[in-house]
Image (tube, rainbow, N blue to C red; front, side, top):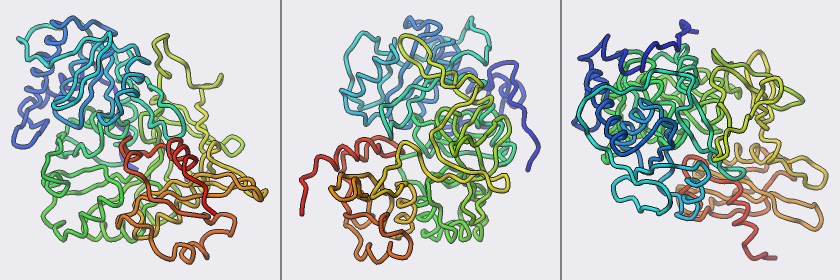
Length: 466
């Protein structure tokens, strides 16, 4: 692996880089660019703008918008004055949005352009480009800096609290293996309200490279000129299918998703694109294990600044990137057990020092006396070329107790033909879904992960057919 990178800073990262590399380009949004000196100055101006609006240290600031440069400025300015920043999915229904904001006792909300506002006890913020001036807060990397909601894929979303130190350790561990330095640029290709998007920002701050914001021109256009991106397999496939990879500077891709086709990563490698994959979670500030894609089923080795163990088949993790806890209006709830380990509920094993994930303990159900892990069925179905995503849930059955049903996101909009034949030699008879459904649109708005809980509720609401 590469040289171990230190996450230690004696001042805000953008201040350090403004002193060492003041004229180097740090940030790009379309045709507009900022040097590190300008990023530092602009952050100070927006920080003073927040102070002028009554924002205080430890206040909770929420940003509700799709990915945009304003969310970057709001996060940096919030951290600069010692406030706590949380981005929330702009597609969240208003009732749930109100619940999320209330659950963290938000003091201020900034709404992106065209975003529907919600009323409450909070103050509606503006991004004010105030006069440059001293900001009293000092760099304290262990202070709570961000709140990131979990996807709520198996329950209600939780607000996960991290410090700058947590994020920098997360970034340093990954970048010790996946090379990204001052000459590189990373596209913000994932939502900033999700930990995987937020992690891109902190890798940028750690490395001193360039952060590139997405445009309305599409992924292929956005990838022009960037060296790094975080993508899902279908996005990478579209890039390769475009036939324009020779025009790209893309060197490394961090792939997310439960199934990454070997043929895809081989094809990318032939085009000079390194493919990386791993295993992670919101509570650990993103990635926990990682490796270069090699066609083998594991999800990599444990990254620096993390620890991992298997306890009775369950993955336990801890380390410098582990959350401060779940944030509530009443305080922070510790997530670690008495020995400092976070019990993930993910089922796994370590083979030759590499982690293998088998599913989640809380997703498993029993059918006719057999244990069924939905993730195993999902992984098989995701190898079908017409299926982009799938969630498998259980339904009651008089004879077997529970049986699997698969809800698909199909790239044709239809249930693929001959799925029974497709799964016949890949799944045991009891694992084969008894029926297939197309995922309804309203379940596709929750972000990167589809909520398994909501899919289950939707399937249970369907009329029972013979």
